[in-house]
Length: 543
Image (tube, rainbow, N blue to C red; front, side, top):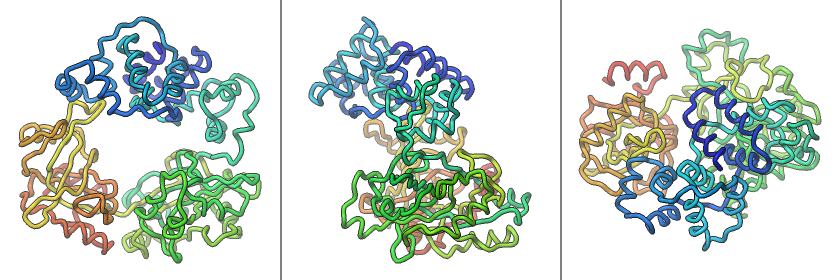
């Protein structure tokens, strides 16, 4: 655990990508199995242990320490595991291996788990305590993505990154077969059924950037408001993967049953009724489920809108130009009406495409995808071949109501904000936002919260209704889970409206109108504009 604790600490305080890779590679080369496999699984989010909840950990601490002292310490530190690691009064009395820690967390019954965790904390030093708690909670927060971690594996020699990623879904901790393969052993063929291939991603763009490109070299299609998936049918094994490689087949048995082909298709998973694509909110009802009931299958039927083909009838198409891959899809039989090909848009100039984007035929369309005709299929996010040009965000001017301290690097700031709109004479909370603001704006918001607190509810502060913020978001749906009756999608604070009186903030009915009319984008909608326009408004201080 000592070496793992040192790795986590050094990764957290190392900003350089290459330095992170070198640190991880050295750890993996020097650490024996199965410790390195379990540690690596924790770093990639693939270590699925018995859930150690924040409530369980708080209960342990409050049995030994004054609850108010702990509350104040947690409020100052901002990270639960780090607070416990610092405040716990145990002493280092020996070493605990990563695999022993995993075994303890996997095999200890629910009733005995608190005592077992307390026993471990008693015999570890502060750094090892923190590493153990991070392992137990799965909340590492060290600035290392799963793909970057797998890149370190590829740098150890042997298989390349794309080969590792194609087998990743079939591998399980502690990855003994994987490390043997990297060391020159046999490829783990048992993991190769219905393999996931890394998806190709796009980069954001706007009209100003597009004008430098030749529209004749590109094609465009609608960007549907679903989730990106890879539908793989290989040797009789059918699987549906999210863009990150998570197997979501269990939640979509109707799509799995419709995959009567041999190959790997890239597309958008949507809920579709009588040919019409439903809102993302409908699709969300089926996500994150292990199984789906018959009533849900009937009321929320899923479908796949195909964008591209990676493999077809045993042939790898990824190195072919886009339009050749497209020709294969246009002549293909997908075997079901639930699976269809995303149509291309007709345009001659970027202004033509801008007009289509501004007036899509369906309210669930998010914007347009733009792709070079000659682009090959490359996993990851290469700059240049593919672009996404999303519709301008919807906006409302809301009043700041509550704030909470952030975590990790933001633990010293109030960075989690609840905002509201007017409903009659009262302000009604309509959403929360954690990002969208610059570092300078975060400091300004933090000062406002500290200087205008009127009430405290544990870690939450209620603030005087004095500040208006512009909130941008991608969509809004009705919701029975929120008192306001609405739920925003991806809300973020895009601007501090120092110029606007609180009484002139938007009303709840403005937000509700956006549900029924997709062309309503909020008060002063012209302010939303392009990214260039929003940047200019920031520089000018709103207006």
